[in-house]
Every structure is written in C-alpha cells, then in structure tokens.
Image 1 (tube, rainbow, N blue to C red):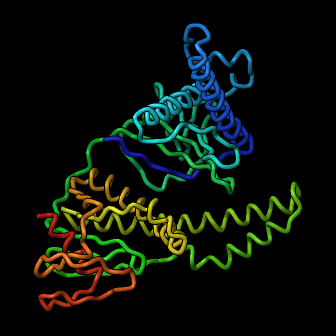
Image 2: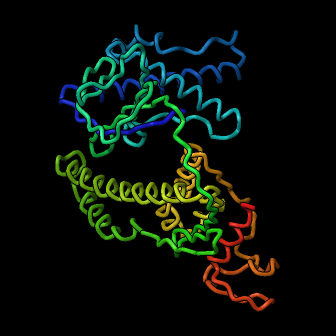
Image 3: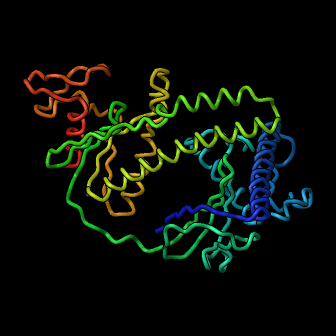
Length: 362
C-alpha cells in the first residue's frame, strides 16, 4: 500500500532559495515541453515533413545551463506529469494541458528516492541536491520511501509530502452501516442501521470570515502596484485564505476518519458540484462546503481500512422517495424541509434521504 505523509519543512535561507529555484525549473521545463508538443501538433496539421520525436528535459540543458543546477529527477517528473496530462486529455477525462503560471499554479516539484537519497535522520529529512532539512515529523511511519514532493504555499511555507510503501493497515472490524445525505443547511445528515440519525452542522468557514477577507481585499486594492506595502497586504490576505483552508481540512479529515472508524459500509450521495455551482445564489456556499473533497477522503480512507463505500447514482431520488412506503413523490423545492407522504408518514427531508441511502447498503 502506498501512503503519503505531509510535514512542514523549516529550511535555511540558502535551502529555501534552492527549493524555489528547483520549483521554478520544474515549471519552466513543463512549459517548454508543452510548447514543443503543441509545435509538433501544428507541424503534423500542416504536413511539413516527418513527425519528429518530442523533446526531453536533457535536450534543453545545453540551451539553458541553469537547469543543470536543479534536481534532474524533478525535471524528469515534470515530463511524466505532462505525459499524464496528455493521457487524460486523449482519454476524454480532462481538457488540453495548460501552461503553468508562477502566480496561479501550485508551486511544487517531485523527486524520487534512489538508494537512500531521500531519508530521515535525527529530525531532518534528506532531499537530493538540498541535503538535510529540518522538519516537524508529527507522525512517524514505517516503510520504504518512494518519492517526495516539495511544495510552497502562497504564504511562503514549505511542506514535503513523502510517499511510502508500507504494509496494509490492520483491519479493524465494524458492523455498522450508515447512509449520508449531504447538504447546505447541515453539512451531513447520517442515519445508521439502528435508525439513529445525526445532523452534522455546516461550519460555514468562509462565510464566518467573509468580513475579514473583504477588509483585507480592500486594503490590497488600495496599495500601489509593485510597492512593498502591496506585497505585505497580499501576504496578509493569503494568510486569511490559508487559515480558512486549514480549518476546512481539519473539519473534513476528522469527520471522514470518524465515519470510517465507526462503520463497515458507507453509502453517500453523489452530487455534481460543478453543475450546481452554476446557480450564482448558491455557488459560494457550495464551494465553501467541499463535498467533493469529503467524498474523496471517504474513498481513500475506506480503501485503507477495508471499508465498503457505495456512491449512490446521481439520479437516485433519495429526497423524493418515502422511506416508509417507498412511493416516489413529486420533486420538492429546496425550501421544503419537511413533508407528509400520501401514506400519512411525516418526514424530515434530510433524514428521509439518509434512510433511503442507507437501504442501498443491503
């Protein structure tokens, strides 16, 4: 089993500068290789001569000597990332690969462990061409290190994600089943096989900090372009957004782990957030609630710990079906939180949906 562990890095100024240069080189080579692929496609359309082979990172080193200073495996992995992006494009699962931007794209690079080039000793992690870097290992692990991805946040913090090959986690049996209905009024409504329902409140993290975000954005807009005060205001705003993102991750990880620990079979509805966000009145709330990330965490944690995750069909009318008699009623508006079926059963909209989802586990 491959599992990733992310830790905060504390590099020296010289190490931080080298990490930044390597991130820049990986982004540069990705863009150059993409530019070459696009040129090959254009040449093929025009029919100008035989189709040539795509360039490699090594072919650019004589032209750009600064690439020789970077970790060669970081450049090789940039090519692999581009190959994967094109594979997804040709498979129809993603759009055409886009150029990476210094300002908008994720700042990171990946390197591989070759005969101990990545290892942990005395509270430090060794990275190729960087040496030993101080880091905070809050979670120990056992296994063989395969690779490491170094990333930098917009606030200038460095992190390393270490990919480890290790034995499967011990299987801890759990007999419970749970149906989970996701929403905005409550983040999740869960009903287990004992017909006990629980409503998990929506933390609304972005909404709660919206006033502070707006204030920081207005302060940034008043600063002169290129000034030091603008850079300070930009950093202040980035820290506000980073705090919200960290709070959201903390909430999602704790809830998803608790659900996986307590239940053997988990049924969750499938929501198409991208389509739902076309409603401008709900887009901000849907983006804040992070349903996709929650389901993604449930999926990989269920795989780690031997649980069964069932994703309900997107067209399954869990809200419209009466959980008592099974009759499907008419579609209900979002503001209808309670309703009475023709059979006489009175339902809470979300609890009724979670019960219907639970029955898919049988």
